[in-house]
Amino acid sequence: MSIRIASPAGSAIRRRPLAAALLVALTLPGMAYAQTAKEKELEARVAQLEAMVQQLVSQQQQQQSQIAEVKTAQATAPTAPAAAPGKPALQTAAITPGANPGTRFSYGGFIKLDASVTQTNDGDIADGSVGRLFYVPKAIPVGGGRTREGGSDTDMGANFSRFWFAADTDLDSGDKLKAYLEFDLFGGGTTAFTGNEIATNTYALTLRQAYVTWNNWMAGQAWSNFQDTAALPDTVDFLGPTEGTVFVRQAQLRYTKGPWSFSIENPETVYTPFRGNMAQVAGDDGTMPDVTARYTAKGDWGHFGIGLLARQLKYQNGPANDSSTGYGASVSGKFNLGKGDDLRYMVTAGSGIGRYVGLALNNDAVLDANGDLENIDLISGFVGWRHVFSPKLRSNVFYSRAEYDNETALTGLGITKSAQSAHINLIYSPLPKLDVGAELIWGKRELENGDSGELNRLQTHVKYSF
Image (cartoon, rainbow, N blue to C red; front, top):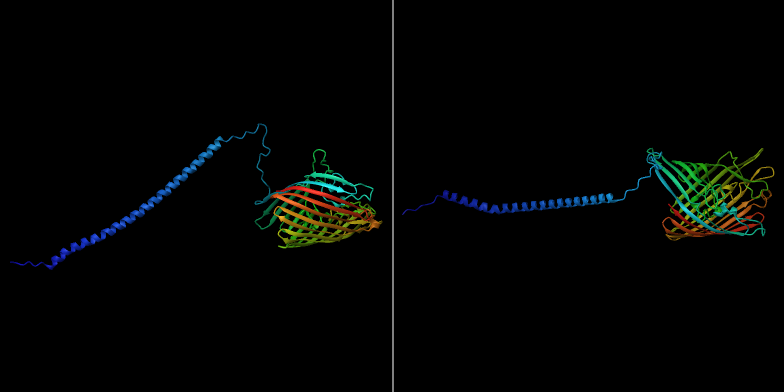
């Protein structure tokens, strides 16, 4: 009997294939799992790309469909008729402004219908005169007691409609240029050469402002630097507190620096002949320009300003001539009360400044028996309150007055001693930029002889600004 003993080396050899088999068996599932995860990730990416491609195709089809619809609409749209032969276009060439590059052009204004009913107690206001169109205290008739009867008149017109053009340029050098033109259709009333109220109601074009500004300088026709237009009340009447207001437009050269402004302006003297009462003579005989200075402080509270004026009064009539110095000061402003309410005011006093106040309600000076000029002193002013009921409804109440110190031995007794007026209005804005308003006006003018005349007026308007 023989016994076979296995070699240890052979046993080791037989165990190695078994270990390899076990290793392969354990590794294959992991490899299979990894391969499956990668395949799923690739499949997800492919699906995402397919969705994106499908979306792009859909968008392209939609755009092509819209283009086709536009082409169809254009093909079926009626063709504009060709211009008749022999009638070329009015403007065949492109309009190219000659302004500096980068200039900004703007345009604006308003259309305004005014309608008024006026009653006076001492005579009629002449048809077609400015006193029929807006409140002019100088036009209130004063006939002298019972020698004249009062009158009642109704007037309508659109001649205070207004428009303006502006061109603004900012140069590369940092300089700023501006040109401004403003017109209305007032034309001096219906007694002007342009027409009357019989058939056409035509009116002349009126130059209001025309100026150019270069940085701090302004040259041209504009409101006088002695005047504060920002203090004027919100009125239905063209002006409102006329007798208490500085109101002049004229040619000038002005320099502005911060709150300060200075100007030299066109000189003009208006004077009363010796014992000429209300007679007014305008003499363009001035040698020196009128000189003004103004300071204005502004803030959330409103504004405050003071203006100063110095001028030469001069007349020449053949060999007779004389001159004097006029001067004045005006304090004005607006004080905000909150929620749209405010107070507005102006007080002006001076000697020889009559043409600057109240549309020349009285003259600058009077001639004495020797032909020498004697200044006429004055004090005037107004105060007004503006109240806003709602964004569409507002009201204004204001009072105005002017007093003159006439040397009656020189002027006579038939010259204006004082004038005053009271106003109350209501303005409704049913739509943006559209105002419908009504204003009650009472005015009175008194002469040095004690005679006086009164005016009562209902002033209405419809105004669209653009």
